[in-house]
Length: 443
Image 1: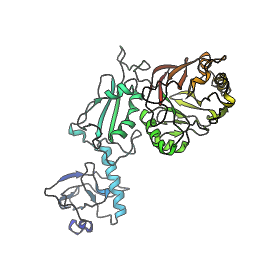
Image 2: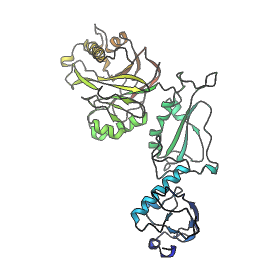
Image 3: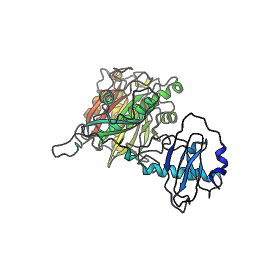
Image 4: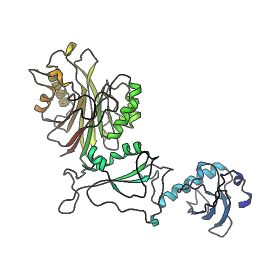
C-alpha cells in the first residue's frame, strides 16, 4: 500500500500557518518481532509527507494520526507504519517498541532502567546536542531540571546542575547522599517538574569519598521519623499527612494515632509494615531499607482513658546490617496509667521484649509520642532515663519551632551502633504535632 492510499491520513489535524518539518529515523528492531525496515521521513502538521524512503530503496508507508501513540520524544506528532501491518493494534505495538528503543539509544530513562520509570513525557536530549552537562565536582547536593513544572517554581531545563541551597538549610540535604536524593520526591511534587539529583561527598586526602565521615554520604546513612498523625477528622487530614511523609523522605517512620494505615500508605507512597497494629503502624521506603519478613509485631501496654496504648516493632536491613525499630505512644496520667512511674515500667517492658527478640545487642531505634509530662517526679525515672541507662541516646526531641506541640515527641538510638548527624522538626502536615526526624549513621 503506497503513501497516497493510507486511510489513516484522512484524520483531521490542526491547521497551522507554518511548516513543522521533523526528520526522524527509527532503527529496525529484532526481525523476529518486527519486520519493519529503517525509514526516513518528514511530515508537516497537516500530515503531508515530504519524503519517505526506506533503507532498501522501496517506498515505505507513513502514518500521522491523532492518537497518543504518535508522539515522538520531542513532542511532534509522527510515527511510521510498515505496509506489512494492516491493523491498528499491531501498529501500536510497533510504535511502542520503536519509541522505547529510540529512548534507549538516546540514553533516556525507560522501563529497563532499574533507577527510573518509563515516562512518555520525558524530554530526551540527543547526546550530540552538547546539552549534557558534566556532573559537579564540588561537595554538595545538586539538581538538574529535565522537565520544568507549570510555573510554581522558577526552573529552567537549560540551567544545568544547580546546588540545592533550600534543601541545605531546611532539609540538611548536603549531609549525605541519602538525604540529598530523598529531596527529589517532595521537590518534584511541589514544583510539578521532573529532576535528576546527584550528591558529591567530601573527599579525603587520598582523593577517595568521605565514606562514613559526616557529609560523606556513606551507605550507613539512615533517616528515621516519628509522626503523630492527629486522629480526629482523619479522612480529611490524611492526604496532608501522606504528603508530609513523602516530602521529608525518611527510610522508616513510626506513626501514632493512625486511623487508616492503608490510606496513609497510599497517600505517602510508603509500605505499611504488616502486624504493627494497633494505632502505631510503622511505614518504610523499600528504596532505602528492606523489611525482614515475619519480624514485626505489637503488644499492649498500660493504657489511660483516652485510647488503648501499644508498642510496635519490626526489623529492617540497611545494606548488609540489620536493625530494629520500636514505636509507641505513651499514656497520660489517667486510669490504669495514673502512676508517674508508668512510663518507666513501659520502658522496661520494651527492653524485655527487645531481649526476647534477640535484639539486645543489635542496632535499635525507638520513636514515639512520649507524653513526657506524665512521668514528672517519678521515683523510678522516666521513659528516657530508663532507655539511656540501657545504652540508648536521645536522638531528638520535638521543639515546636515549625508548628505543633513541643517536647512530647522523641527519637532514641543505641549509642554503640549509630552516630547522630542531625535532628529537626519538619512541620506538621496538618497535625497538632510536628513530624520529627533524626539522621543517623551506622558505625
